[in-house]
Image (cartoon, rainbow, N blue to C red; front, side):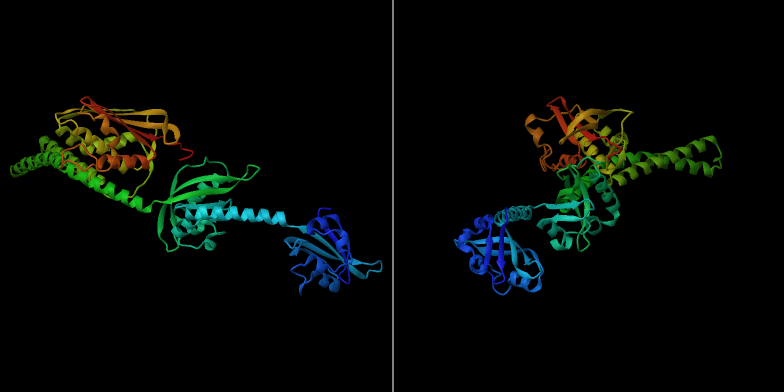
Length: 483
């Protein structure tokens, strides 16, 4: 046997001592036979808590209790002991049977495991991102220090709780839970990036950007998820403020052109009103000519209203909302605001918009701002006039980030002064500008880049000094089943 086996009589003398007991204790059998067990084993339980005494008194076995004994060299050894009564043929207790298992290797492995666990816990504690693990039921099985800091809970207040009920706001709880259930069921591919709000202990909502992976057991079954999350709330607010300030700057830039465009129909309306008043005085209102003039007033008034509404829609601070959009509609809405402004720059516009574009999942307002910034930049790059061409198409298997997918492509090309090669890499850097002092602060293209990145798209620039520039934007097409 691998376990040490001893029999001990009622006087605590060792009667038998097997080979495994010799190995565990370092004593030879002849050294310990008929000696008191407590003189040989020197267990921490020998004084006052002797399991052997209790077994002799009660006749009941004691199984798998841990103790320490000392070997022949005096070294402390951790052991597991089971003590049972030995009985005679007439059922009288005549001694004890003790089975001793050496736990030294077991303890060593547990200690090593504990060290590795503590080391891993230290790594998790110093990480400046949230790390959480959920089981299949959505219960938290692991949360690191940063996660506790963001949420405002202690670790023991989160472990074992349902993540969705505790930390996900009710307005998105059903959607996020449904996403998790599909992930755990293996019906969805692991998402590299996913944003959703969480609810802290004091009721505040924070926006977290998650990277998720699934956890499998040895059999390959999904047993939970592991996620790292970065608190991007403050960054989101700063980006929103930057977008808003750039939007207001664009509105100011457009004001003169819009005022001019609105002034024309208003002047016409005033002329027709004076004519109608004159006819009213002459009692000649009921004519076909009067009807045409009233219809003209209505059309021009609607035109003014439409121009002002588009400008207000663009300048208004709106909540980011992703929805399926046909990019041609965004381009047309953008051009309805800035078309006149561009024509004042002596720029001719040509649009070649594909009629068979699939939908993309975007925030209409933000993409409109990005396109407007690029179009206005293009117009300003043609100080002596030129041509602006806007093309839409479908691009197959485009690499965007680390994924390859089909995308809608928007090309905005001008015949302007172009961009020197050494400046191409700097264009999206905040506050970098090639415009004259006072003509720009260098935030327009930085905002454009941020908007396209947030929509998980990409933007490329090709330019030849003196021959014009093309901005190419790629936005992933909706996979209806996934998105």
